[in-house]
Length: 108
Image 1 (cartoon, rainbow, N blue to C red):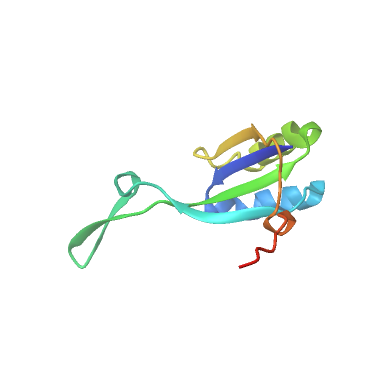
Image 2: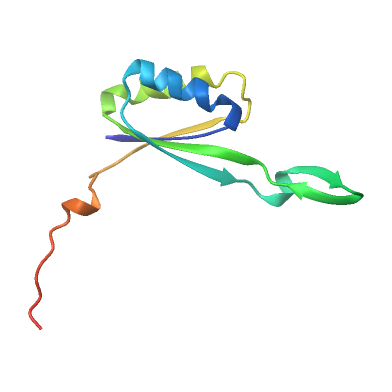
């Protein structure tokens, strides 16, 4: 299994999800992430300057090894208009869910 993480802009989310759904990729997790305050844009409101955070979206997908390169290229192709999009692909040794953990009854 391979874990694909991508940080993209909010404006490219529909393009990426549309491409992933069309390709038949599995489910994904989406989270809003923010960069450092120094990396944001400086704005002013009623004469008071403040720094707006750069909010982006982080996608996480688990895909089989043979599909990882194709899915990463699919995301990269959908984010051609976002120069700050980043994609990481890494291996997952043993995926598990919380429900799969065995629970033992402990006598008190």
